[in-house]
Length: 338
Image 1 (cartoon, helix red, strand yellow):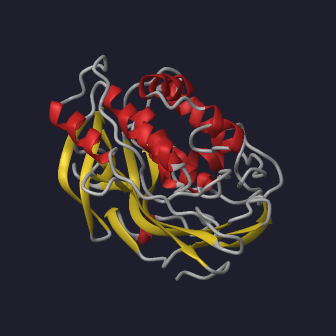
Image 2 (cartoon, one colour):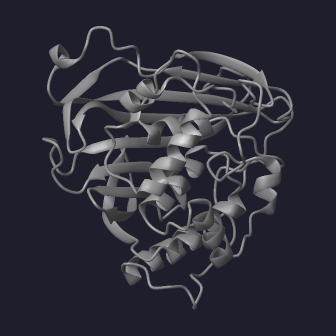
C-alpha cells in the first residue's frame, strides 16, 4: 500500500485540493488528514478524490481473490427508502450474479484503473483561474501469495482537455501534480508502513471484520465517514470498489447496503465508462453528483464518476470532474497484461 508518503507544506496541499467542488467541513478535514498522511515528499498531488483512488490501488486482500459477485440477495424489507424503488430493484438484481475466479500459485491479479481528473487553481472560494481534465492510468499486479512482491505502475498520456482558461494561465513554475513511475514491494507496502485501515484502504483483518449484513455494513461505512449517508459515503464506497480487490461476497453485501443510502437514485441507465455501459447510481449534493456505475445484468462494477450538477466557477453543469473505469483479470506474470 502507498502508505509512507509524508506530509508536504500546506501551500502545496491547498494548491492541489482547494479547487474541488464543495464538501462538508468534516469531510474536508478528514480527507485532508488522510491526504497529508499519504503524500510523498516534494511531489504535489492531484485532486483528493482520484488521489485517494491511487492510494487504494494496492490494498491487500487475504484469501481467494474474486472478480465477480456471488450469491442471491434481496434488499432488506426494513431498509430506508432510496430515491426510487427502481434503484433498489436494480441493486437487488446486481447482487444476484455468480462466478468466482481463484488465483493459482504463480499467477497475478492484474487491476487496471483508467481515470480522468480535473485539476485547477482557485482565485477564491467560488472561482477558479483555470481548469483542465487529464488522464491517469494505474496498473497493479497482485500475486496469488500476497506476501510476495507486488507491482504498481502509474502513467499518463499528458493530454489535457481545458474546461476553463488555457495553458498560458498556468504558472510556469507549477510542479507536476502527480508522480508517474513504477514501484515494486513485498506485501504491496510500497512505502513501508500501513495506513489506518478503512474501506478504501482495506487490510486482511479489516475486511474479515466487516459485517456482511447489509444494514450493519451500511452503518459501519457511514460511521467511518463521520456519519455521512450521502455523497461522501458514496465516494468512499467507490474508492474501495475501485481497488478491484473487494471479495465477491462482500461486494454483494455492498450492493445491498447501497439500498440504505437515503438519497440514492438511478441517475443514468446507460452510463458509458470507456465504452462499457451500465447503470449509474448517484447522490446529488450541492454542486456534485457522485455516481457508481454497475452493469446490473452481470453484477460487474464498472467504475465511478463525479459530475457537476450545476454550473460552477465558469465550468458547465454536466462536466465530469473525475472518473474511474475498472477492469481486472488473471495473468501469468508480473507486468503482463494478458
